[in-house]
Amino acid sequence: MLALALKAPTFLRAWQDSDVRATTLLLLLAAARALYAAVIAALWATFLLADVPDERVYDLDTYYATEPWMREHILLYLTAHTVSALVAAYLIWTWISQVRGAWLRTGLVFLQAGYAFGLVFDVAKYVAVGARWTGNDLDWLSTRLAPPFAILDASLVAVGFILPQAGPRLQKWARDRAGFRRLRFLERALREVGPSTARARVGVLAPLDLRLLQRRQRIHDGLLRLAPVLDAGLWQRAHDAALAAGHPEPTARGIAGAITMDAALTAWRTSRRQAVTTGAGALPRLGSEEGDIEAVSRVLPRPRSLDPIRERVAPQETRAHV
Image (tube, rainbow, N blue to C red; front, side, top):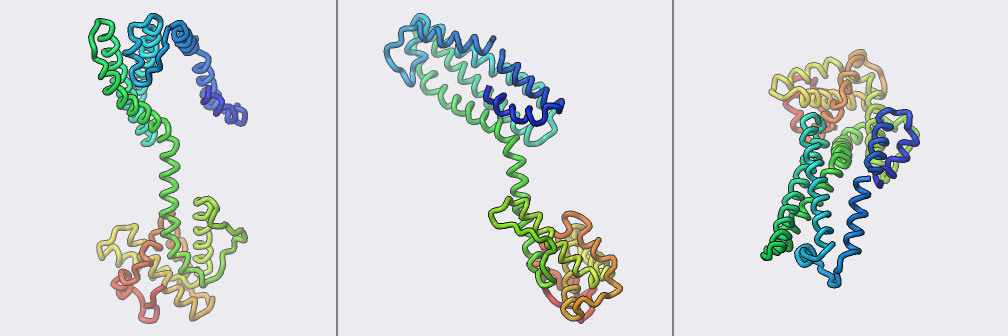
């Protein structure tokens, strides 16, 4: 019922979506099934009919195992829990091989483990209660062995339901946070060429993805201003030299971009927006891929690591650090 209530706003907004309609219908059928209601009603009825004068927090199952109606109450709740765990475990087992999403698959693994521990809890309770019926005392199975498995059951099932929802969000947040931190070096280096063309200002309390978008916009605006003095030939020579030095392709692109931007900033300071013919093709290469500007920003804090490549490709007058 709670899931159906939470899904209702989505259904009202997107009722024309076939997936939304199917999900809502499934929740409605699950909430309306005479089975769950019958079990709940029977649990209430058997408890009210039973004579339970003493409050037993830890050993209720074994203490009242032979009490009329309470015996049925205990057996009913254990059976209902066992059946639900078996059905859920079976459905997950048949479905998990078809799931491709890593977070959803991990969540199903947690659910499966939780239901497995729940079955261990049920078995321990069954044995302890059955021992009381036969005049034996195995209460420790119910009071000591079963509770930890109940805690594991509840905890793992909770994680299994939460992980597919929270996992991707946390992963995106961590990725955005890392990218936001890495890009600060490149943004700082480009501040001198002028402010961003975007008039909107995003505060520090704004969502992280919005602040990351603003930082990327500022970087691209700065690179556009540097376009007249970005040397495409220098980028290519630096890229080839970095590859020849053994750097992988992403790192080579970052090194080439950093050296090219470094030389462009030097030219910007000296020429003050006087266009040069060598700059026509460097801007697309400097930021043609999403990871390029991050690769550039990643090498900027280590200017000395650029010196060997710079000495091979850059003229003497452009050897300066950001």
